[in-house]
Figure 1 (cartoon, helix red, strand yellow):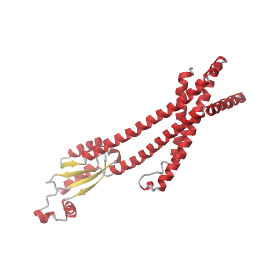
Figure 2: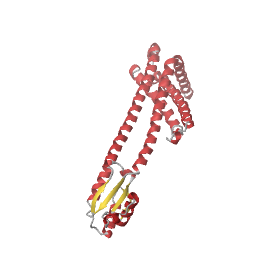
Figure 3: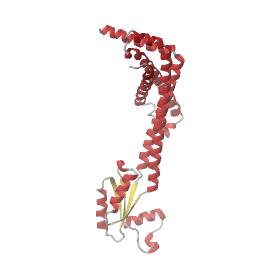
Length: 295
């Protein structure tokens, strides 16, 4: 029984490889379509990883500046400062009393404010860093509302317009990357599916004979699944080779000083390419077989 199954599997494997050889040109086109798709997806992923890093760097600069009431005493201002530190979403903060505010003014403008107007009108304030998981517009708005409810707080400000624009830009870029990747996947599946359809048409009589002889649908379909998978594997190896070449060229041109290229040449990327290649090949075969070899 075991020997029979092995013989069947070997036969199906041979049929799949023979079909691949018989339809060399369409199979090569499908494999190239898969490789191009995988290259574009890999580059998109590399851009995504670098973009995520850029987002984290930019969001590290997200800060909330709080101004305390003008007539509040320093002790009460410090108490309010500590209360704000306990709020969910606040990571750390710096308290700025009137003396420190005057020093900052002098450093920035090279003038002593007390010498100019005879007194120090600068209010006590604080600057807070926002926790990583709260660095989006909606979360910051909620934190601001909580801060402004504290009695000794005059106002709480942040770079509202910059954050709104940045959040919108991030969403648009990510949506574009995923949309392009989705379209590329559809194109690859289309090419594989068409190649398998060509083979099915050329072997339509053989399929009918196998059905009359009582062959199961899985037995009939298996070689075509294998052919799609073979095309996917070939396409993935082509993409890996071309990505390595691209990595070497960009590395030689010192592009690694500007973007993180290591993701292109990583073990994870190689594994993802092989997996996606096999998946695209299988999905293309499934699409073709669902129409012409019914259960």
